[in-house]
Length: 396
Image (tube, rainbow, N blue to C red; front, side, top):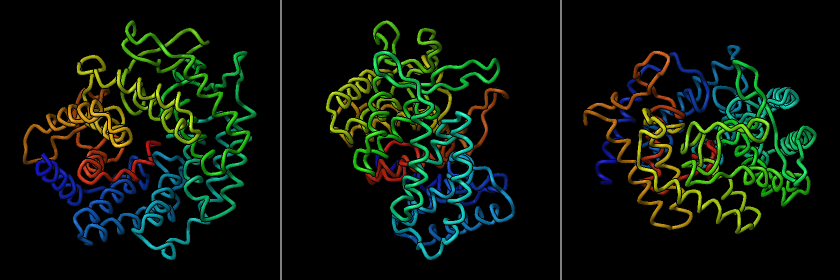
């Protein structure tokens, strides 16, 4: 199978290099920075520097967009995702720090945006303050100023948190833009699981800082208090909770919403705090998810990382790498095979397409989050056990 995976990965990289990314912004999860990440890692995998040169050109192109006025701050589409990519590339030996002196200036800009977002209760990882905080966490070893920025984020999280009678802690936000409904998102892309993942990384970095540890314990307690009867509901956690009783249960497994992303956040929190109970719960949740084989349950149309089959395959692969439990290896293989089924013709990567529900149509997509770049990076993990790149998804 590794030969097949190598061939498909080569097709992805070859077609991505040939493609026009003119309409793609500088962002990490939806733009040129994500494609650059794929090319850098592929260059290392095949030991060919020509791919790294192409990747470097994409980073330069992305930076030119910023110099020309692009200032959207988010981790998904904007400055913080681009900055995270550059810092990640430096830390992992792909580029030299002396070649990227502009990060200091971006830090100040992103700090101001992060404060604005968190004070407006915009916690979202992909589009809000937590995403910028994740960048500052990876940047903090380089500059003490980022530690100060993070301390302010923790202060605001504490100030805006809602503590329940049982000691659990949650953060509420607008969860339905159409009707303005306020609720608690549980998932990894936009909700409580991302806050847990961020707090766990912060606690690990600052050696169990007391306030953050209280928030982490309370947040985990809240998420666990929302656990469902998996036999009755077919899933362990709801997607969104309104008024602690009205639930939405649209997606059972996936990175963005669903049990698998939540389980990874719980597992990493348990690992950092040496809380074996949390880790065991996470393993139990993943074991339940590993039994799912009916693609019609969540209407799986996409092959991509965010809510598609390769994202599920990658999370099971990561969990197998952590636990060596064969049930996760088997589940990963199943979902990887489902991803490959979406490549209808073995000669063209254009068959890995994203479903656009508003247009009821499939279209080619190159991004990391929902396109072939994410499929390529996941295949690199399959072939090399290299998972560092998925820190941008709060997995490793």
